[in-house]
Length: 179
Image (tube, rainbow, N blue to C red; front, side, top):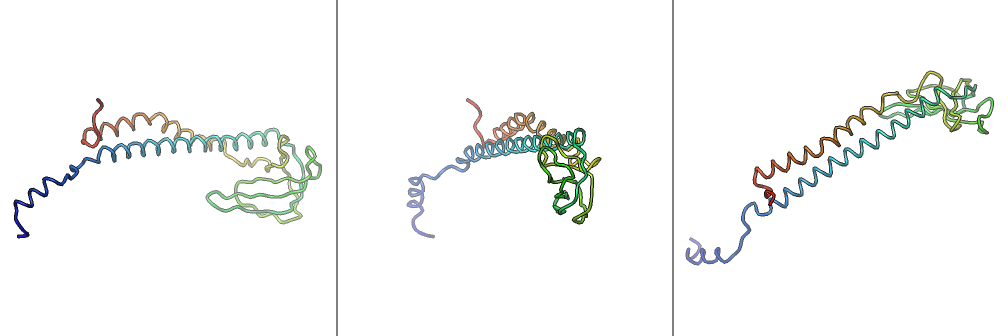
């Protein structure tokens, strides 16, 4: 129809076309590396979240246990709304703690204090710029355990996931078997 068929065969024989699936091993290796790196990043993120939340919990527990109880007058109240609502209450202490006469009272949940209102605060003696309300910890004691468990599962399942994916790609012929 479009010329001599003999010429067509000769032209196609001379033109080297890549075999179908020739680039599949490279794509499969990239996919495997991508999944492995993603898995490790998720584990690292869980580890960092665990450290941050454990630190907040330890600070809150310490302040509730060893905080200096002081009467304070509210200067301002700022509510942070988002995934978790919290309040930052700027207060002036009746007696300075470690040389500080003002501090920020951290409260989990929304508050509605007006300036001039009196309240009792527990001031962290190691960090007088941090305070909480008595009996209202800023961080739950078990808050850090969920990301810790996720990170633990992620780290210990990593080799199994990589081995499973590699075997699957070899079985599908998308990755060469080890030599």
